[in-house]
Image 1 (cartoon, rainbow, N blue to C red):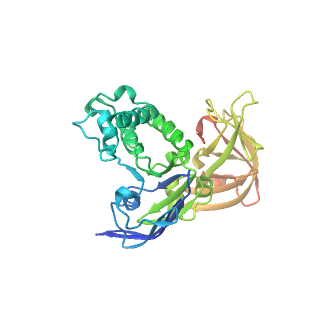
Image 2 (image 1 turned 120 degrees about the vertical axis):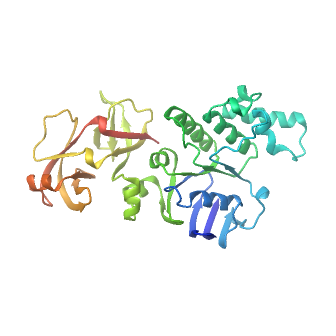
Image 3 (image 1 turned 45 degrees about the vertical axis):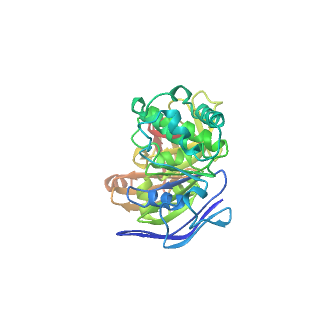
Length: 350
């Protein structure tokens, strides 16, 4: 278990301000925030590259705030990989083992084992200049994991990758976590956070604004900044119902929502953009396959129009213009229909 207690750092014009959070063994902990929010500085402080002005870092209840980097058993994978260009992949992966009093055969065996785990055995004799970004990221991971860290720190590991490579590495990271590796991963991408993390902390301007499960963060944002940054109001944990002719997911095991495309997981999260939801006074005859009757619970003016909260068994947020609100004569307590297309939904496997 890792605990940060009131960690404060002063680096010129930037501060970390009383950062507190706990990472349990086996967690996939996401630190989510915009560029410049302080995410990387938190990682560097945990790793020992930055010493805090105040506060404590505890590893399994032992104070490691001033512990030397090499004694912390914490591995950090940098965003730019930091691979040695003059070494082969095998030499890069095995580099941290120098000085460990291992024989050449023991060192080679460790390199081979971690290379198999990372799927890079065929690359061991190659030079980094011949490799893709995804391959370099796997090498950086292997080089860090060969040290057997208690906690793996990842600094924007999926940045600047195309969709295919990003999904491959997501699967690899999930597998590492399922094997028992505790991980702290910083990102600015909320979909990445949802698809990987079991715990999320939102950071901005050096402060932790909210932490909790994905459901807590996205369903109940504690500030306007978090709500605006995540941009998600309709966020539900769902179960895939494969007994239907089409792929459907169940919200609260009873509200069936139809999706387009195949669901590759039996559970996950459903996101519906508020602006993709239509409100009408009667059920519409349209291509929108999802239609629900509900009751208007609240009307909230916003910069983008009027946010309408409709209760269909769960609260759905729709965004309409002020003109539409007046045309529909919407008031709290009025019965309406909402509809949205299956193609407008986003399903993220858990």
